[in-house]
Length: 303
Ligand SMILES: [Zn+2]
Image (cartoon, rainbow, N blue to C red; front, top):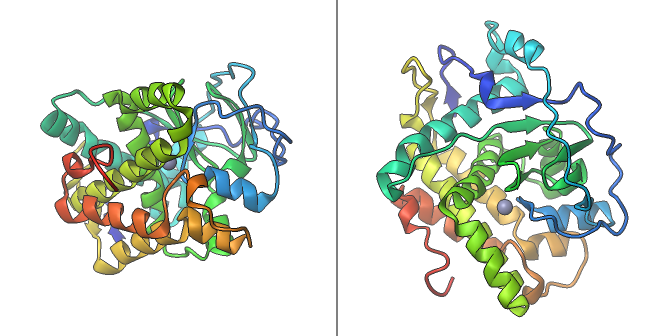
């Protein structure tokens, strides 16, 4: 993968809260956790299992919609060596993913895309879904329509799960924006209602939602080289087969079965909330090979 150094990094699409003290999570998951809070993450259940405790999210309070200060990030990301910086690169990935959906959502679903910012935080953060801790991994909060990520997660992904390739990063973000798209389309709300009606199928429904987000990430990956900044400069110079292989490798490594095995826990498909390695790989690949988010119909039939 090569990013275009002439592309402008639009830091208006992120909210940098790393300097704000983060809302007091202090990196320690809240024991017992206080419920699900409606957040939809990439690997939530499992990373918490790795970290060894509660859900890490307290949904009791409504959370605060504080804003960060993007001044230093904006400065950094307009410098010549911006693309050497992890946060600027990730901002550019967000720019590409949203540029894709701005076109794809009206084209394929007949609906306008509403942008969603990505919040960079460290350790802990207040969200519309409650207070969250880095231990839960990146997630999307439907209550405030924001994606949340502590960028140190990528190190965890590499160290604890063995997913090292850089293309894991845009894959993670594209998965979370997949949840935003599900929110815009009403898929997420519909699924929550179904879960309430039929609690016994809650996990199976969650798997469908997660696999669809993987598939949407694949559809973005296929179309990413066509995305451009506001001036029309291409964001990616190239995305290679190796990059796609890295995304697939990541999807595989964060499958529910793979994570259970790594944590020396029994593999129980009924407890899966995100899908098996095979399924995650398969649905990312489906989105990638078709390049069409309409093909991501995980709710339509058997997986
Ligand atoms: Zn997810």
